[in-house]
Image: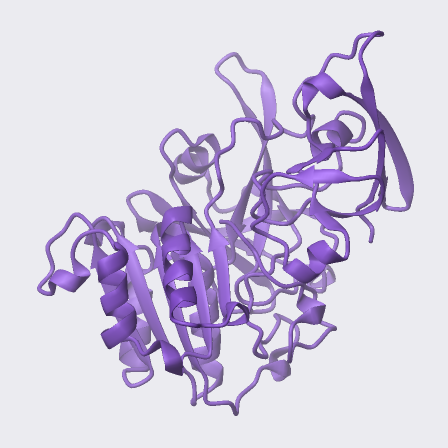
Length: 398
């Protein structure tokens, strides 16, 4: 999963009672079902007890972080956190995520080979800004969705980027008979297509309102336009003749950085307003991200020049010194003294570690999760932010 967009209470037409960019917490949930999607992907359904349904209310396009203790080859336990988008329309009592096996991915490999119904796992309450600015429904607010506007939505997804798009498409197509939805979905081959049957079912159920364009990079299709990788020329044709960009009310882009940026550049060149484009990136795979829940180890010598980092979390204030030479992020420093500091991807794409700079200054390396208005108000991603003043105070509760 990946990038994000506007905080929910600021999005137009959305009930502010539905949670959006909120403080998140972990709860232990039971796996109700594990369903095979492809040879390398599964759909996992978690049971949501009645007393936690308010905590797990969500909008289509949001995600959860999963936390699990695993053992290495020597029998030593270690913690892993991974973020996964919710793949189904909001239904009380359950949350579904899709987990695709990544090459070298410890968590995704374990889940695809070992996770079973009846297992338990720590699941973070839903969050994320990859949501429509049009009125949608939350799990506990089915009456809030817009059923009147004649909107046209277009999504461009690749691989497991289909996950949040499935939730959005299923929701709006079922709830609003005036909605039209186009999906351009890129994969290597037909065998890699996640939710293949579900997509075909959507096409059969809404033949006049749902258009599906499969693009396969390693498999020949009848149309050359739908064969091979999506490059600038192919995209210009897709978004020029197959899809009329001037008639689209909202765009949803989810996949690797290169594809998402290619589409964003194309739309910007055509004059599509940025506020119409919602995007989410795959995680960056940054080798400097915090490990487990303790942060990257840092040794402080008596002679080291240090930054003074303070942070507020759950009404309590923590303090930690960070050596200037360590060049560590605020998140990494905070994790060394308080392991419950919120984070999920630690790659600048999910927004879980969002906090407001109260005093001092920082430099944020990457930002794929905060809207410009949030940054203007002083919010930063602490996993990407490093102090540039002698002392810094950030507020995770803000």
